[in-house]
Amino acid sequence: MKNRFLSYFMRRLGATALAIGLGTAAAVTIPASAVACGGFFCSNLPIDQTGEDILFATEEGKVRAYIRIFYQGEAKDFAWVVPVASKPTVSVGTATVFTRVDQVTRPIFNLEWDWGSGCFYPPMAAAEGDFDNTDGGGGGKSVTVVDTGQVGPYDYAVVESNDAALLTAWLNENDFDQPPEAEPLIAHYVENDMMFVALKLQQDKGVGDIAPLVLDFNENNPCVPLILTRIAATPDMPVRVYVLSDQRAIPTNWLHVEINEKKIDWLSGGGNYEQVVTAAVDEAAGRAFVTEFAGSSEPMKSMLYTEGQYQLDQLKTITHAGQFIMALQGQFQASQELLNLMRKHVPLPESLAAQGVTEQQFYNFPDNYEAEYAKISFEPNMFVADLETVIVKPLKEAQEMFDKHPYLTRLFTTVSPDEMTRDPLFGYNNTLGDVSNVHTAKLVTECDGETTTKVEIVLSNGETFVPDLTNWWYSPTGGDAPEATDLSAEPAATKIELLGETGPARALGTQEVEFIDRQLDILPPEQVEVTGIDPAGNPGTNLPGGTTSGDNEKKGGCSVGGAASMPFWLSLLAGLSVVVRRRRR
Image 1 (cartoon, rainbow, N blue to C red):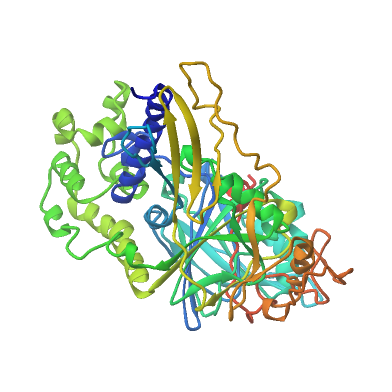
Image 2: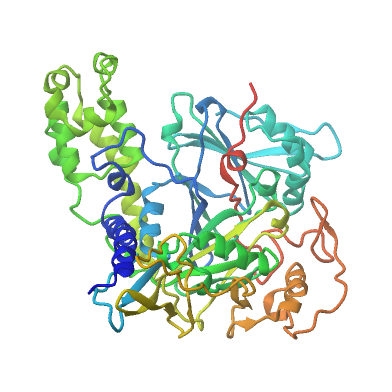
C-alpha cells in the first residue's frame, strides 16, 4: 500500500516542483515576458523591480559599465545623475543583457528525492541640450560643462565643479533636481574630484524609451558607490553586480559571506533565499557580498546574438504592415525596445483601441486585423533602420563583450541606508575557485505502511536536518509531522571572510567582524590583520552623514582608498526614488 501522506506530500510538492522546473527551463530559452503571457507581446511587459543591476566588463586600464535604469512616472519628470571618475564615452545598451545573464547565473536550489524503504515513488526535482558653464561669483568656484550630447533617448551633460552647493544649484536649474539632503553627499564626491553625468529624456521620448546606460572609462577597477544612494534608499535594497574579466572578481573593502544552506526553504525551491542573504550580510556588519556564480562566461555564448540571426534585408522587402509584424515574430523576441518600435511604426489604430482591442491582441494576431493593417502607411526601410540601431547593434556589441572576456562573476548583497557608509570596491583573485549557481540537496524519507518514519534533507556537505513540514503535512491516521530541526540559534552565514587580490580567503571570528569592517574603511584587505581579537577604538573622520572612515577625508569613496588607485567610479542609485530624481516644474 502506498503511504498516503507521501502521496499527498508528493502531489503538493510535485506541483510546486513542476512549476519551478518548467519556469527555470523556459527562462533559459525564451524571454520572461513570453513565459508570463504566452504571446509575442504582453499588454504590459513585466519589469523586474526587485533589485539594482550593473555589469562591468574590465580589461587592462579600461572598464565598461552597463547600468540598468528603473523608473516609473511621467517622462517630463525623468532625470538621472551619475558621478564618474573621469570623462566617459556615453552610449546606450539593451535590457536584454540583464535578462539573459540573470537566466544563466541566478541561484538554483534543486531538491532530489530518495524515497527510501517502503516508499515507492519516483524521484522528482524541485526546483532597464543645451547647458551653460556657471561661475560661482568669486573665490574660484565654478561648474564646468565638459561635454554635452544626445545618445539613444537621452540628452546628457558631463559636468565638474569644485563646489558642491554651486553644483547642486546647477543641477536643479537644469532640471536634474536634487533634494537638500543630497548636497553634503555630493560634497563628498566633489572633494574626490569626481565628474557627473546628467541625463534627461529628450522631449519627444517617453518612459518606455528608457534604456540601459553604457559608460566606457580608462580606469582599472570597478566600484559601486552607495554613499549618495542612502538619501532615499529602501531597507535591505538588493544589489546585483556582474563582472566580466579574465579571473574571479572579489569585493576588496567589503566582506564576503557564504550562506547557511540549512536556512534555505528547499521545499519551495529557495523561496526565502534573499532573506537568508540579508541575514548573513547583517551578521557581517551589513557590508558583505555573496558570490552567486563565478566561472566561465561560455554559458553566455550565442545567448544575445549570432551571425545570420536577423534577416534585415528580407524585412526591407515587406511593404504590408501586417505581414511585416508576422515576419518580426519569426526573428525577434519580445522586448520593451521592440514594442516601442512597433508603437512608432505600426501604431494600434484608434478605431480598434476604441473597441477595446489591446496592443497584445493587435501585434500577436495580425491576421485578425488584416483590413486595419492594410490601411496603415508603412515604410519598412525606416523600421529596419531603427531595428538595427535600437536592437540588433546593441545585442551584437553586448555579445562581443561577453565573448571577449572568459570569466564571469555574479555578486549579490542587500544593503540598508544606515549601512551605505563605504562604497564597495572590486578587485580580482585568480587563486580562488569557481562557484556554481546550482545548489543541490536530497530529501530522504522512510515509511512503514501508513506511517512516515523519517523525513530529512541532506545537504551536499553531508549535514542533515528535518525541514518544517507545517504547510505540507497530511496524515490519514492523524499523526503529527516530524518535529523540524530548531535552526534558530544557527547563524545565517557559515563563513564570514576577508578576500584579497592574492592568497586564499581568510575566515573571521564573530568577535572580530565589526573591527575588521572598520579597518576596511582605511586599509586594503592585504594590510588588515585577521587575529581573532577585537581591539578597542578606531580613530576616523566623518563621512557625510556622521560615519567614520579613517584619517583621510577622501577615504571611503570610490575614487580613493582600498587596494585600487583611482578605480572606476559610478553611482548605482536605489530604485526609482534614488536613481531617478524628479525634475521640478
